[in-house]
Length: 335
Ligand code: UFG
Image (cartoon, rainbow, N blue to C red; front, top):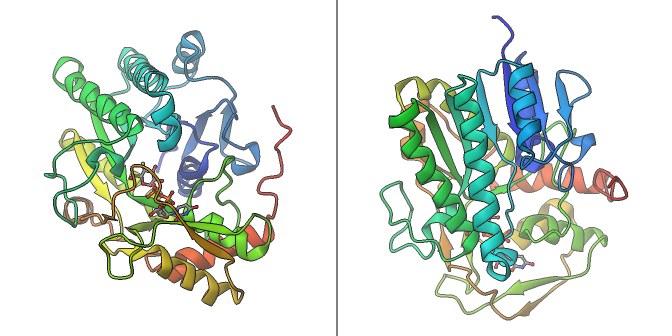
């Protein structure tokens, strides 16, 4: 098959880098646009992916990139993505995520690249009325982060009629795990996610875990989430490309199974063979009790299913990554 070229913004970040790896492994060429503020050069494969180190807000750079390559599609990951921070800086979140995304879409349209895949989020749904959450659920974000992604999804919808831009918006539930071959994994700073924090607490590379709330209306009192393996998420991105030939689409992406915070801690202890030092604290503002996806539409339309979906597999791959990379990609002084 002829080599194709894809643009991946934020391709040196956590989910983006797993997609870049999947594209390169199937023989595609990738151009990564990433300013490396959150991303890591070491997350990119040694060959097959070219890094353009630039801020996605740099309009001239965007034009240069689209002039230099002809892309089959754009995968857009680069965004502000911390729910808590978005509540303190809602205007920045809404303004930056919306303007950067739509400017990118505009540049793609101008260059004649009419396939666009957006990294979206379960935060679109806020506190869902029913579970599992399918694509017909109310869109009612309870954070400025969720609101900003909803605005981007809406902007993209308008672009289909006017410009023929076909977009796939993938609403991730809880992305977790690491490349099963151990080449790349999760390295956020600050880290706010449960699985890396629990593993690093067990490894002693981060402080004990605080469990946010133990009196939720769930079977064991702690929040329930749908953890989806990052390699399965990458696979979902590849599969929706073909689906775009039929028009724009929106998909919820999760494993369909919920696990409580206590169950995650137990899995980390079982797989790591060490206790997870933890204590119970206050609820974190904005945390819904239960978030579980129905990914039936994605399964039906693309044949996707989570191959590494079991919690143990997610924790096993994440544990292997953190144990072998106690300092992550070890490039904190990069900036
Ligand atoms: N949790 C703790 N202690 C911690 C961190 C997390 O108890 O130190 C709990 C949270 O309260 C939550 C669960 O672990 O119940 C998972 O929390 P994460 O921070 O790992 O993930 P979230 O479910 O909060 O966030 C995910 C995505 C966001 C997305 C959000 C939608 O990471 O990008 O779902 O609600 F916006």
